[in-house]
Length: 87
Image (cartoon, rainbow, N blue to C red):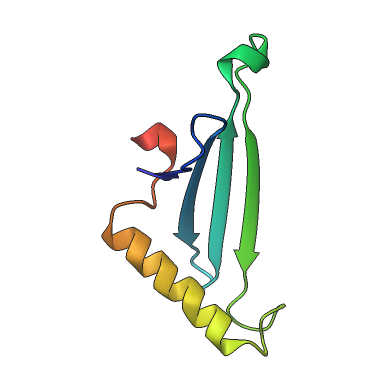
């Protein structure tokens, strides 16, 4: 399962991470529409963030990279790195 926001009474947002074959980590936020506000639209918003592990924006911030790795591993151990449709 993905990790659901603690503001689920306001927004239906899910968070999960993936580890790419290239060694990079990806964070995904999925927001499903509020039934009252969606007006019949089943679409969702998706934000993806890539953390490059070789080069990239954090190349001088090793501690930030290691925090991403630790977060991914903790979420993986808890079974929280799955797309909500796979739940």
